[in-house]
Amino acid sequence: MSENLTVLGVSLDAGGTLFEPWPSVGEVYARAAKDAGKGQFSPTDLEMRFRVSWRKRSGFGYDRLAWRNLAVDVFQGLLDESEVDSFFGELYEGFAHPDAWRVYPDVIPALDAWRDRGIPVCVTSNWDERLLPLIERLGWMDRFESVIASGVVGFHKPDRRLFQEAARVLKLPPAAILHVGDSGCEDHQGALAAGLQARWLRRGAQTVGLGKFAIF
Image (cartoon, one colour):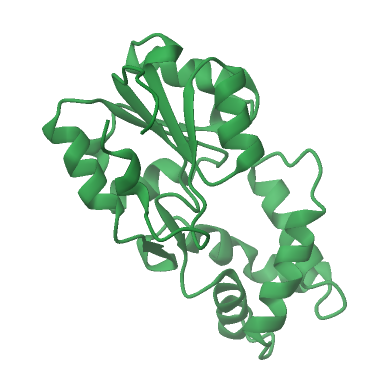
């Protein structure tokens, strides 16, 4: 880190920062449809459809209904709503389990480094009620002071209130907290606007991962 600012606590985004869908969202969607007897679909095509649907989302609520509507949109023209509803429950619950995610290899070393230095860490993510069970199933609960999911607390990044909640659970002033996430708007700009320090983790655009921000 180039700035000479004191960091006493760390806030981390989840998806794209700690882990990513595995093998891909398209693969998970295709498997769910196949297991429900709805036919075989191209994971690559479903991945593309998901990304298009994700980009055009507006006012996403990060709750079960929002994800259901997104899944319906992904399968639009392939399956009708009732067919998607027939397996959506299994699809939704599947993403609360570690086998639907790949943990980035730099995450555990970074968490270890912060723990060794006595620096408290929390998760601050645009997510839903599945985030806490996922963190529990990963065996990470002892690594975090709290897991803050926007869909649970009722406001979503870049809303400054989500970052203020991170400051509350870490029991630190915002300026003493470093937030790291993969979204330039939601994480980097949102955290700065809330008075936190912030680093934009651009995976794929740099060779250094989360460990780069564990040194300060």
